[in-house]
Length: 489
Image 1: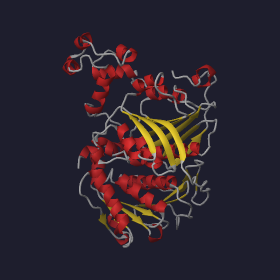
Image 2: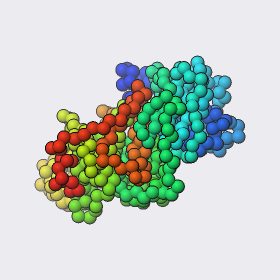
Image 3: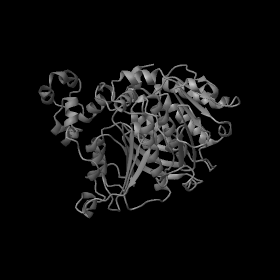
Image 4: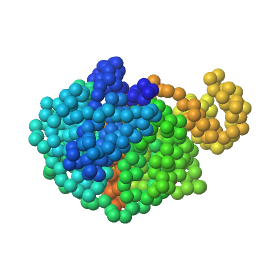
């Protein structure tokens, strides 16, 4: 088991505690989590989805997870063990325990309705589009539940709440809350007060979209979309390959996926229901093809951490853009309809001072001239460029003499990317929740919920609160200029 797998969650815990990473390493990597399913729930399909994703997420920040399921739920235990082997790449079996032994664990997750008073515990369940959670200290006797037709969105969101509650217990920041959240209306209320939302369609709906960025939040989107009644086609664009440190926050991949292009993994994950064309390419190189070879689909979903690229994606001006993001303990989804005056990515995200232009960033990584990268990316690398490159790039560039600049850059990104010690903290329940919320917006859009206003949705796993804002762009913004709508810029 490679310790770098846990680097992102450990840094998130250290930032939360304002301590060095030695404290969370002891509390998370040496701690124990118990995940239990009540007997009346273990045959409920939604509860099964909650269990499997809760196990998936917990194993990505805590190696010691044990399961408590009824004796006749052997198949469920086998499924959990398969997840452990998939993530760690080892012949692992999860331990089993009885609920009477729960006091010996650092955190307990109960899937059902019972409250485990006096324990570091959280109870979760779901109904339709609703996800519910209550901590053991919330002061309620029972978590509300009512049966509804299968809907993975509420179930997967409940798993995020469960893993988040366990994480907070383990780092010494326990939550005190009882709530339910709707992924359809984005409301939050006391358990039992919100409507479960409409049933999912009986027959699959047709997707035609781009997925730009195939990282942690997009893993959450793919994990949810795979379980929804959706078929169709998708172009997946990402220039990186999966690295061991990605295993911590990426919920749709395991150890056997290491080294593969992230875009290719999306194709494999969504096969066969969604026909994915994988594009292991820098977005700006891919975007050039749109002017001649490709078309902009009505829907674009993005999961990016770079503001410059976010702006570039927005300037494709799709009918609808769903932008998913995560930062430390906060999830965010922004929906921008081209037909409305809602907030767009150009005004919603300000390029930070330290973020350089895309061509300049690629020039620093490759040693090539940024002007030629921007103006002629498919052009051949010349000897003059090689002679002008720095000493640390010249030998590598010499092997690429006469080859296209974009091909050389993509190769370096996929195969030669080095570990960045300044990586951002990330935990799987936050990143995947952003993707699940983005999948909910995708599902609503396919069901005909296409509003002309914007949506700016945020959830804090620190406070346990949601907020959904309706924000507008100024009349002079590009998105309100009729002359640029529908034009790739």
